[in-house]
Image (tube, rainbow, N blue to C red; front, side):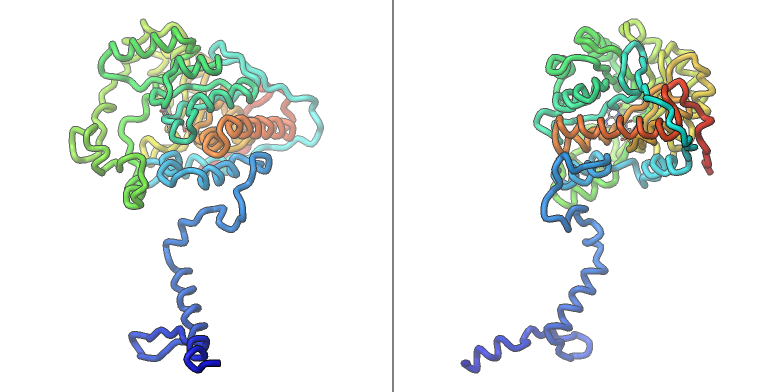
Length: 408
Ligand SMILES: Cc1cc2nc3c(=O)[nH]c(=O)nc-3n(C[C@H](O)[C@H](O)[C@H](O)COP(=O)(O)O)c2cc1C
């Protein structure tokens, strides 16, 4: 062999140490590179499916969490992050999930018979006490946006859906594409007329209930700063140039959502001919004020940890709100539900039905309408299973006695 080539094939990949001046051989330098990478923060952000040779198919996904991993893989990072993040330090986002760990279900070891989950809330008949929460901009996750979400929800035992005020498709189009049951959500607008026209046209198109969101006054999602730095953001950073036109000040306080008073419900009541529900209640005092202002339903929610950070988890405050409402109106619940057993815990603490925000988005972002259908069906099946294990054959038999709560 030619000597020059022999030199090339020998361990010739040398790195000089800046400190000692010694020369590392190829093996040592690779080990040094490996050690460097292992300590690198870059690796903490890895794709959860990085060790897989393929993305799993729809039939292989067994829990809602599986759908999150697939949605993460299939969506651009900024699109995934917008759904995942919570406000500020994300304490409340984490606590929403943690709270379910502090509630245990008491098992019953005798087969109790077939389970019925049928119920009716605000005149809407449901096969399961499960509703799709209003969430914005489904078009970012799938070209058919809310049309696909509604299609999937309808296919999953006609699960009702609350259409967000910030959709990719208008309400009448979504209803026309898939039919009812459909409710509509409103973010209060300062111009009363703007509320009137939105609410009246939604009701004319078939909205069976109106959900008024009152908890999203100021929100700041710090992870979008990260997305801006990745240069892949579909949305501007809350502090960045993309958000500035909507802010009247440089402090990222969204001034269009800081103004409403309880009398807002009295003002819009004349335009609302269907049940009117207040979404975002986390204290018994506010629940009572809802009732004083003619609200037909209290919706316990902290916007999935996207409203006030360091506010309480919804599960922890649910019992005291249920006690304050005292059966006068139905109580809806969301924020943190990922499993059928979570649904059962919220029902046992007094919710009339629960809503889910991110879970159907993971379904939509992974497999479109089919993904929404499947992930809802998984939660429904898990609920039935949890009811069987706890000896409940009807929703009426679900109560606090079936729980051990260990809230701190
Ligand atoms: C991406 C995203 C968008 C949302 N958009 C809206 C909205 O437009 N209107 C609204 O009332 N709530 C909105 N929410 C809050 C949800 O309705 C719901 O309260 C929350 O997602 C429940 O928590 P979960 O995601 O843990 O189930 C949004 C939540 C997320 C995650």
